[in-house]
Length: 138
Image 1 (cartoon, rainbow, N blue to C red):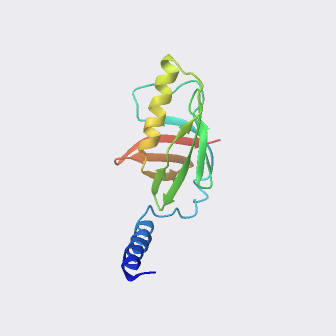
Image 2 (spheres, rainbow, N blue to C red; image 1 turned 135 degrees about the vertical axis):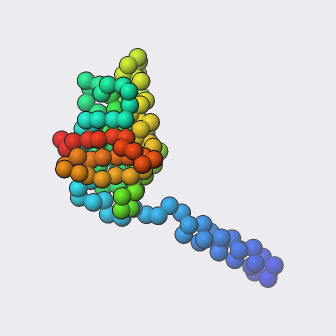
Image 3 (cartoon, rainbow, N blue to C red; image 1 turned 90 degrees about the horizontal axis):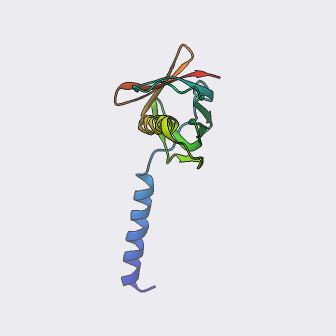
């Protein structure tokens, strides 16, 4: 390989390694107290909780559940008390009216979560320093 071509190849290789190592930190093992099936009992919204049960299941580095009309899923990264979700995917069942509004509120609050803790058997998810969602174990 001519010398002129080696330099760009080496630069690309070094930059690739640097970019990969600067990526999102890998999740640690998901704590046992966080794993399991949860049902929403409170949220930071003026809307009342729906009669339809909103659920959250944490299974390793994946979450899924029911958000009123639709099922949802995402990946989960946890580091100490930090809580980060990947893109949230949902099924495509048509929601209208209050159910649609409720689902959008829940998914919006869930997307914004940045911290977690469990206190007295209650899973508390928060964002911007305030509690957003509270779940009890199923």
